[in-house]
Amino acid sequence: MPGNLLQQALEEIQKADTTTALKDVEVKYMGRSGQITELLKTLKDLSPEEKRSKGQEIQTLKTGFTEAYSTRERYLQKAEIDAKLKAEFFDITLNEINPTRSLQAGTIHPLSRMQREVEQLFAEMGFQIADGPEVESEYYNFEALNIPSHHPARDMQDTFFLDHPKDEKHGHLLLRTHTSPVQIRMMEKHGAPLRIIIPGRVFRYEATDATHDSTFNQIEGLFIDKGIGLAQLKGVMNEFLQRFFGESDIKVRFRPGYFPFVEPGIEMDMLWKRGNHSKWLEVVGAGMIHPNVLKAGGLDPDQYQGWAFGFGLTRMAMLKYGIDDIRHLHSNDLRFLNQF
Ligand code: YSA
Image (tube, rainbow, N blue to C red; front, side, top):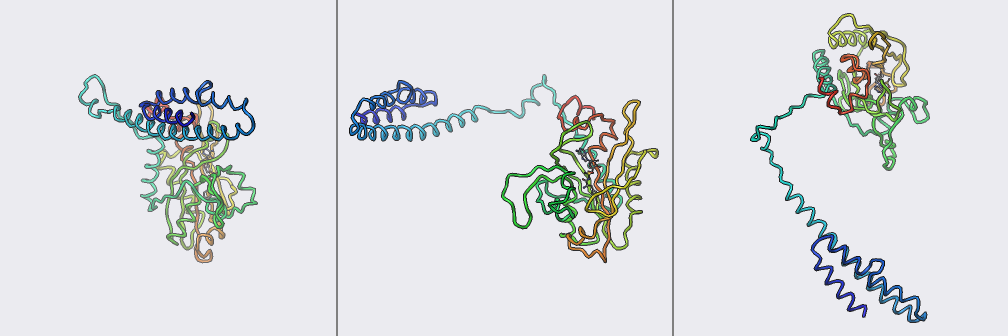
């Protein structure tokens, strides 16, 4: 009897030509009152020996049904998706031939525009433009920058770690918290002298507010040569800011800052005007590259010196365009973006 039943069920499975029809077959045989389910219910009234042999037969029946069902289900699901895709014909010429629809041209995102502007300005000052990966290793993001695992400075940049096995040499994978790891990559690849900027996105696992986002853009600057000093760094930054903001009365203040990868370190704030109030906003961290960092990059600190900086490009966009909340920049809100 189960043999006939299986035969009959398999035929019905093959005949079902939609996933809905197939579901009906499943209900008929395996549903709460389905034929196979009913057979299973009869087991409880049998003697132990009968239970064993009958139980095995029904189990074979169930397995046969389930396997045939799954195969057919996969086939029908694929066929239905293919048919749907075929039906979704998209006429890309429609906009042009239909005079009632107007084309909406997009604009370049303010952050991309600013990044291009900054690249242009630094290129004019003799800097090359470099790039690095957003998914980094602990080694490049921290260790090589003189931030060993026990160092409290790691907490300054709360990190998104990737769920990925740890590498013996380079540690865990993470989303880079700053563009500084590219400093090491560039030293390793090109040696010295170096004069580059590295724009890019960075990520921090931190609460957001009007001046902090968890994804933001930085511009790293790196100048390595013989006989380099901090005065040139201040000169380049001032020159850049004046050209970028196009006014000579921008208010900046320099103050000492601590980063394990520089010695000494400085930070620079700019005056941020919001209506009648103004407030100092930190826009850049910088300093003379620490000898350990030069060594990690394969350079001899007795021969070469250098300075580096990391601008918060997103914060500079706030200052340049008078944006009162950093989160607007990644909101994808067209009412905001259309203003640029
Ligand atoms: C320092 C010395 C160097 O030799 C080279 C680079 C640096 C900068 C360092 N890598 C760094 O990331 N420092 S920082 O944490 O202070 O960030 C640099 C700038 O990014 C800040 O001055 C600020 O303008 C911006 N920033 C930081 N956290 C931010 C942010 N912008 C938006 N949202 C956040 N959560």
